[in-house]
Length: 125
Image (cartoon, rainbow, N blue to C red; front, side):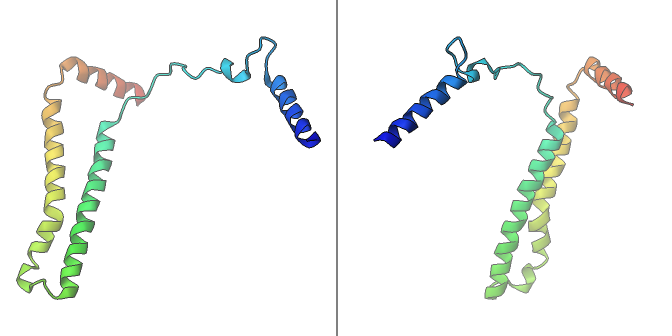
């Protein structure tokens, strides 16, 4: 009993040490909601990385599929020229689509937006 009372007393002493004279704890004075300007999102880099991930998953899936068929002896030799088309065709088509979509979206930008970008580029040089 005596040991638990000492433990409880030390807890109370510890709590009173972290309390301010106003009766509030120190944690309440920290600023967690400080408004900071977030950097702009780099869509081009993010979409490229997403394309890398999706293409890698596509390649891994088909390579595993073809490896299993090859080991089982179910992959006919006349289908071998189709393998590179199945592996690399869709990822390259997706990349081509993304590049052309970016080109098309840039066509909607106003001259004022591109002028601001040119000024920004000149400042960083």
